[in-house]
Each structure stands twice: as C-alpha cells, then as structure tokens.
Image (tube, rainbow, N blue to C red):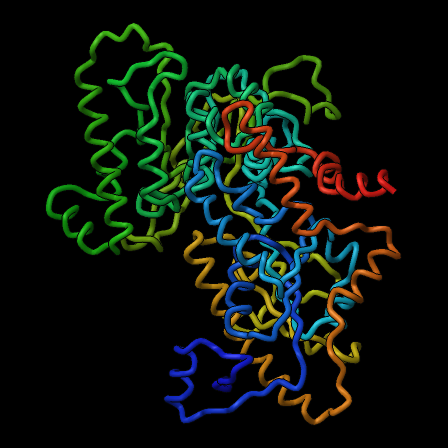
Length: 546
C-alpha cells in the first residue's frame, strides 16, 4: 500500500493521511500514462470514473456500454416521476466531457469484444454493469400471461429499448405486487397515479396511452415478513400516501387509501403500549422514522373506517393494500374449458394463492418468516401479478470469475478486487480486474451508497495502479496500454459501430425537442433502431455532402 503524491498523480488527501499514519510514503512519478476501461455506464461507472480522473491526472478512461445511451438505471430504472433524482445526469455529463474520458456505446462486452481482449488492451478493467436479471418466485403458474417481472414493467414505462415486453393488460381491478422494496412501490405508484401527474414526466406517450385506459383500482403489495422488515424507504412510502384517491375526478379532500392487512397486523407484530415504545426507541433512526409513519397512517386509516360517511365515488376510489406475512405459492389461471397443456402460458391470471407465515426470533430486521402449517391458504383475486423480489447480475463473459449462488462477480475483498489468478496463467499481460456497484455487491442501496461504494473501489484501483507502475519500472521496454485503439480495430473487423458521447448528445437533443412539443422534459426513443438512426444521423449527412 502506498501514499501517492506527485504533480501528475495524487490520491485523496484522506488516503494519504491514512497511510502516512502507518509511516508509509512514496513519491510516484509514472514511467508512462495508464489506461482504464469501465464496463457499464450507470451511476457506479460514472462515480468511479469521476474519482479516478480527479486523483490520477495522467489516467485515461474508456467507458463501454451495450446500449447506445448512457446513465444506466438513472435513465431506465429511476421512476419517471422522480425527475429530481435524474438531475444527477448533469454531473455525469460533466464527467463524460472530460477530455481524458471517452464513451463508447453500442458495444456489448462478452459478445462484440471479449473480456480477455479488454485485459490485453488496458492496465485495469472495472466491471460496473449492474444487475439486469430479475429473480423468480419459482412457483406454479409463474409462466402465465399476466405474470410479469418488475424489471420488465419498469423497463416498459421507462422506454427501455431492448425490452421485448408488450404493453401489459391493465383490464383488471386488482394487481398483486410481490415484494416490499422501493421498486415495488414505484410500480404501485405508477399504476395508481393520475395521468395528469405522469403527463409532465419523461414517461413515453405510448405508455401514457395504455395507462389512461387502465381499470386498475387496487394494488396489493405482498411481503413474506412484517413491517419491521420492509425494504422500502420512508420517502417512497410517504410519496405513495400523497396520491389522490381518484384517477379522473378531482377530490382534494381525500388521498389514496392505504391498508395494512391482515387486520391488526401492526399491533400483533410491533406490540402496544410500553412494549411498542421500547421497540421504537431501540430501532435505528431510519427504521424508527419509517415505523412511526406506518403507525400514524394505520391510525388515520382506522379513523376513516369508523366514520363510514356516504361516498358517492366509493366505486372509483383507489387503494393500496400492504399484506404482510404472506408468501405466494401458486398463480391460478382463469377457468377455460379449452385450455390445453400447450396453451397454459397463454391463460390469464385469476388469482394468487398465498401461504400464511409467522415470524421467528427477536423483533428486528433479522426475524425469519416461517410458514404456518395450520393456516389455510388464502386466495387473492387479481388479474395481474408483478414480482419484485430482487435482481441478480450475470456472467457477461465465460472468462469472468462469477459467484452463481449470489449472482455477483466473484471478488477477493469488499473493495472489488477480482481474483484473476486462474486467468493469469493463460494470458501474457493481464490487466488488473475490479467490480463495483450492483455487479459486485448485489442490488442494494440508493445513489449515495452507490457513490460511496464506487469511491472505495476507485481508491483500491489507484493504489494498485501505483504499485503496478513500480513493478513495470523493472521492465524498461514496457509499452503503453493501447486502450480503445486496439478494441476499435477489433470492432471494425466485426462490423460493430460504436456510439460516441457526441452521438448520444444528438439523441438527447432530439428527445428534448420532441418532449417540448408535448410539454414534457423529453420524449424517449424506445427502439434501438430509432436510437441508432438518430445517433448516426451526422455520419449519414456527411456522406451525402461528399
């Protein structure tokens, strides 16, 4: 480990202080520039690039992205009604405009270019490509038409271009969402939001057209454990409670009905009186504030139930129910006498069958859900089931060390160093290899945590690059890593045309111009062909002018 201090290359002051305390100092004068490749262009990738470029003044960074468009989940995962979160794109754009960084979209690592080829062209490779596979419930009936993944549903309403999912059938009154994380609440909020609320966002017009004809009035969010174990944040839940109770009729006096079931579940799980007070005080501050808000919403809902006022709009009211201590065991299809085994997957959803659970262990986040064998199964009538139980990363290349059980890149430590010992034997000049973000630690955390994680991995990279340079001083003939110059030639031979950041800015301008016409921040192009057509428009114009 080294403290690196020079005019050309300076690691964070706090890192220097940390190492200086150990009596370690070293004046670093690189014998040649260094070149890093980052796979993926989401928040983790840009946060890491920002840190690397700031503290290594002679480093060049290339970002490779399989889509033509950058920014990953900020563009295609953050809900369209969370435009404030998407403002981070302006920061990432500043990073991308650094002259020592190049963005190359429309390049799929593992297909268009192999990981081995990247490691031969760069000093270090950082894998920050996220977690793009959703987890399955593994229950009977999950292949029925009308059982969707949250990943596909979110991709649909965010205009994700490679998505093969057609518009969901919203000709039903009840939707079951399995899972109690922030994504589950995003799904519920989009389903229950008035069109006027979504019309000013960057949600595609084609999606608005489908949502405007939706018959969905009730969303049931199903969780296998209790209120102390929900994964959503206070901000997400509070936003849901602020939705109006009617989709098309203005009624400022009533907000969305929030219900917690089974009846009395909060009292049963959290306790009452002094026991409840002691439990609340023992919780970490974020969990304490969320639990207190859940209790206040439950109390307000009970007061409304007691009033029982005559409501002429009762049949149109929207509601969101949180059903705790339930696990899905089977998706039931609509009765159809003509159904054959080969047509099962085309059958519509009629209901979700749920098992009843109980909690074991001391009250807290580590309580386990255990099925109650004495309780009968419950039938939740619904026309659509959306599973939102998490994501996993995928092995993008056969050479990549990967932990299949956890669904993440196999790392040696929490800093994201990847074990390349098995690869070194068959590669003459292997680059250092790292992972960051969801591909390293799984799909957990918000942007702040992603930034912290990326910084820690970037710090490890800076220290290792410094040590690598020291080792290469022993090899006077060591050449400069060719970087994308070598990769570009390989892509040309394979007929792959990369998208530059200038090409992306052409897409960006075109989307904003289209959005301005309909009063939105942008109108996204939702197909790869449309994105590439706009991206390469200048090249076509240049050919015509010759």
